[in-house]
Image (cartoon, rainbow, N blue to C red; front, side, top):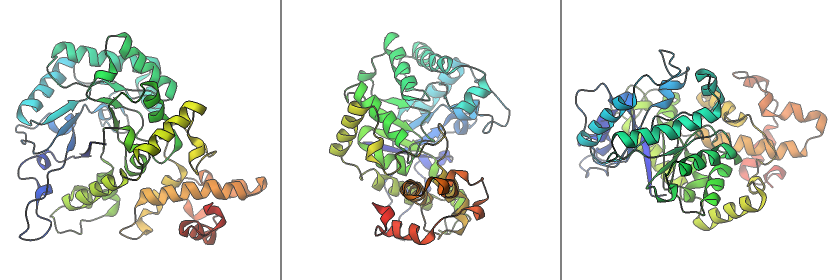
Amino acid sequence: MELYFLGASMPHWAGPNSPLLAPAHPGGPPQQPIPLCMSRVRLAHRKTLPRAQAPVLIDSGGFSELDPDEDQDGYTTWSITPRQYIAEVRRYVQEIGHVVGAAPMDYMTEPHIRAATGLTEIEHLARSVTSTLELRWLDPDLPIFPVIQGNSIDAQLRCADMYEKHGIDLTKEPLVGVGSVCRLQSTVKIVDRFAALHHHFGGNIRLHGFGVKKLGLKLIAPGVVSGDSAAGSRRGRSAGPCTHGSGAVSEANCPVFARQWYEQVLHAATQTTAAQWEAVVAQYAARGTTAALFDVAGVEHGPNMPTPGWRIARTLSTMLPADADVDVVAGLLDRFQAAYWAQEPVDRRREVHLGDVPHGEVRHLRLDSAAFRAYVRGDGAAAS
């Protein structure tokens, strides 16, 4: 991975007076600028824009436009025209500078998004491809990059074929986004998605993972050239009031918390080597899946939904130590479930299946705490 873009809701974080550049210690030198991913939703209505100190990726704001849970106005289609978006991107390139890419006005393919638009998945794929073509036609000098959408491997490969049939050679693109994967963290599915694309293009494609967080990046980092996520801000909201003296109301807008989270992401990206990733791709090519490489094999989750472990860890986050990583706890819970499930008699499996715990009712969870502690330490039977 070459770059990771921190999702930033505060546009001034990109500028020369960014709090991200504040010295780590009093009297010390300014810190290095961080590449940022910024949504047009946060930029469009600003009279002035910061001059970026590091590479910037422009998110077109598709979720805000199409997701009924995100959009206060309840839009189920894009509220701006392609010409309006092009005018915006042109302004960002000129005024912000360092813009290395801007996403098209694409259509995510998660089931709830399709339900909101009333369109089929194929139509979402076609509109994503058409948007890339139209935006590039309106201004071929802007860095609009194609995004592969799809709620399954087959759909993603079909979307890739659509680009090829319309004259876009994805192997020659400086950046190709992969969408509809932000809810697949810490599961075999996110690995399969990227392994499938890597295999399909013989490794000759420069992929960007939209919304790929720490656990996902830990598994696929060698298979992408870049990624982005605003998960640090969401993690900050659950962490509560700012404790770093930055002046932020909560950790969600604290630059110190954001930089710490960013450094954790970069560390996670070093956990899988290029050779290990090639082995993953080879297994996918041989079997059509990478499930056998992971402890969570055999535990099936709903399409594009948070894993049971993530759901429980999120609910428990207020009771965890301040420095606890919810994503790591979620991964441990998912892997423990898989190992513990395999040892339980069929008639008791329902009691230990984390997926049976209603949201917000973790008090009903029946879990062998001693076995879980042994699993975490690595000395229990479940750890194998």
